Amino acid sequence: MKVNTDGVLLGAWADAEGAETILDIGTGTGVIALMMAQRNVAATIDAIDIDADAYAQAGENFRSSTWSARLCAHHAALQVYFPEKKYDLVISNPPYFVDDYKTGDHQKDIAKHGISLSYQELIAGIVRLLSERGKAAIVLPVFNLQLFESMALGQKLSIVKCTEVTAVEGKPPYLALIQIGRQQKELTKDRIVIQNEEGLFTPQYKALTRDFYLKF
Image (cartoon, rainbow, N blue to C red; front, side):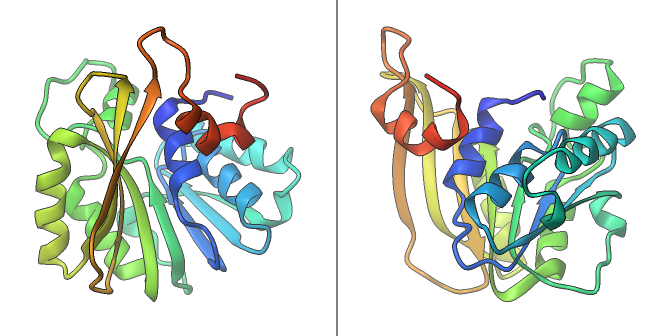
């Protein structure tokens, strides 16, 4: 199963406590959904993806997991996903870039660019699917954070928690892990560093993700 640092960070960082229903948007191979099932033993988790191959892989990974009874993959785009339920937690590692150079590889462009899911559509989907006191956890490149925040505020969602992610100690942050919701709360901010200058994982990163690695 393909695992990337962004997904592991988001799955380990998101507040899954107390959520009875969880939605993973753009699940890919299902890593984040599986992490949610591992962290929250009571929740049922739906995972959607527009890509047929990703959906098939996620479904296979779910069926072979310990938590298969609580995981369900759906081959669907967020824009046309209309379940009867609302979700206490919506989680997504969305397309990375809004206006940027495309690679020419259609599958890669869908995964990393806002071709199949724009930020506006993601936020509209969160508003539609989130329970009244639910929360959403998103990972974004820092250069899109201000844009995403302004769009969210326009839909009466506010960022209540933000963790900036630095790849190597001494470098500027490149990712932002954010929690948004309908409730107005004071913003809390912090930072996590993945590796020190020697290229070793920091104790901070290990503590956050240790349950999801076989070894460091």
